Amino acid sequence: MAVASSDHWSSRFAFLMASVGFAVGLGNIWRFPYVTGENGGAAFVLIYLACAFGIGMPILMAELLIGRRGQGSPTTAMVNNANESGRSTVWRFVGGMGLLAAYTIEIVYSVVVGWVLWYLFKAITTGFDGVDTAIAQAEFNSVLDSTGGMLLWTLIGLAITGAIIYAGVKDGIERAVNVMMPTMFLLLVGLASYNFFAGGFSEAITWLFTPDFSKVSFATVLAAIGQAFFSLGVAMAGMMVYGAYLPRSISITNSVLVIVCVDTGVALLAGLVIFPAVFNNGLDPAAGAGLIFQTLPVAFAQMPGGYLFSVLFFLMLSVAGITSMVGLCESVNAWLEDKFGMPRHKAVVRVVGSIAVFSILSILSYNAISELTFAGRNFNDNMDYFSNQILLPLGGLFIAIFAGWVMRSEFTRDELPTLSAGAYKLWHFLIRFVVPVAIAVVFYRGVAG
Image (spheres, rainbow, N blue to C red):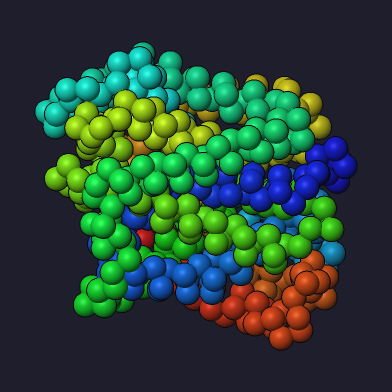
């Protein structure tokens, strides 16, 4: 079933806002700056940029062109493209892998977004005045122990996501991202500007942008490849669906260039929001996932204007989380509409409702069933391993193989008309040879590690 004209993006701006919103998530905001600092600062950034443009950009172009040419949900798009090139329709499994990855990620991710919304509520209602390290740790532990509280805020996040998707591509997703993403950008710039005067800014600049080539190793290159691949949101079905909504008048190549640059810029700008507060208050920049919920509240308590800063910070994180959830849910929603002819409103209820049910297992994995393990991992760890270490690398590998070896070159060339002949040959070479090898290495590293 072809995508209806009403489900096409009305402008390049709307498509870019939705795509960047999908790519920029919570992990991207806190993890990229931390990994950058730990792997040589500017030296890592240079390696990352090479990987983003040499690996991430080609595969993102491939996923979008498959979606636009296939004009359907991920499985339908794969089948349509395979048929057009005279290939087996068994390639539908690649779309299915992306859908499964999106669904499993959303089960765990929705709970974390719930934490962010809860902390936004805490920031607005009580603030973090007087919070020290022990109090912040106890506060976060109480969140993890509160099954009812986590469920409530997870449902609120899913309800917001569902309401956006329920309204449709133009009236829902477009309207939301056209407001939410510029708001997030403004908040990032405003918070970074505040840090310039509040202190810790020079230390953050040193952490992020001073090249230390002594820290660069083969492991650094692997980290850069993995970050480039995963931070752009490829192989999660969302970009393929967004590609199906993309009119032919909009250049895939130019759009992907903007997405990669903005995604990287947002991650670095987030570092200038987070780390000045960390350094200025003598906190640990290597706190990992706990940085947001256990370390930063201590900084908010100590800084001038901490109340306003904390509210704006968690509002920015909420926007990043919700826009990523929209992309993950929309891919599965589009599949239900396409596969079963289901009206959008019914599909949304089923997708969001089922994620809400399974999210209970994710919530309980933080308390009641945390000791219940399979293969040495609890439910959340297994979902994370299955999606991030298995489905995403394999999905990306097969997308590259499909675009480079299965689809006829005249069809991929037709979807990339703004590329010169030489640039197209470079893309085709990268997607056929460089990208599959790089992803295979990341996959092996993830499984073997």
